[in-house]
Figure: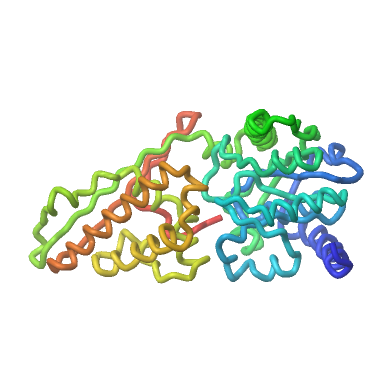
Length: 364
């Protein structure tokens, strides 16, 4: 860490600690679990955009944050990234340069901060990546889990000066992950350790927190497409274009982070995907779907697979391509096209939520 960054980060941490009680009502628990020095890997759940700030404020010395560099940072967060600095990681591929940079930080006795879920698109225990375990095996660094609560909707409340209540629960230190000589054993231990790390994190999240509830819900989706002519008569498409992939399309449309990557990160004109309830022009819908497919199939082919699993990602891409073909067919026949995506979420406590349209934008 250069002297320039060290001074800058200390000033930022000091400023952050001053304004945190003004902008939020944050409770920090478990400071006694923080070791007196590194090397140290700090890990936490990731459901919003405020956790890195909370993590930086909780640890009593400046830390190196690992951050995604496989898609451009959204404009409103660029200044934070550039001001603090981070170790760039390309998610969805073997990023040896990023892992080596992180390992070098730990080898120097310093601290890195990682969010093992890899992003904010979904919140399900067991989605941990192996990077934390591999780094611990390589460097012998122990792991400090943190559970963040009160995150859903917190960013919007902070911007409105509503002082959202949040919790930072620091758990007991986890020992370094064992690194046997055999590659097969080392990989198996890393996978087991990764799951154990995520379980340790989520044990620290308040059980009644929205993050915990979402992580334990089941999801059901239906997507219907209605085509009408100039006389408002329903037109039946060819059988091969009939949409039956409601579960795959719904899983995509109800994850605004994925659509946000296309529009906000990659700066592509796909805004109609956020407004399925009002957009009826199939040519416009086809163009927007084409932008999403350009990003997820050609420019960032590992993006969906890394986040949703490669089998699931392939099914979603296939469904999006079919929906675009249907839109093209409707445009050729001068038809209007209404896409209705509905969802039903059933939680472990028996609560059921039903939605008639996806959220327009990322609300976290």
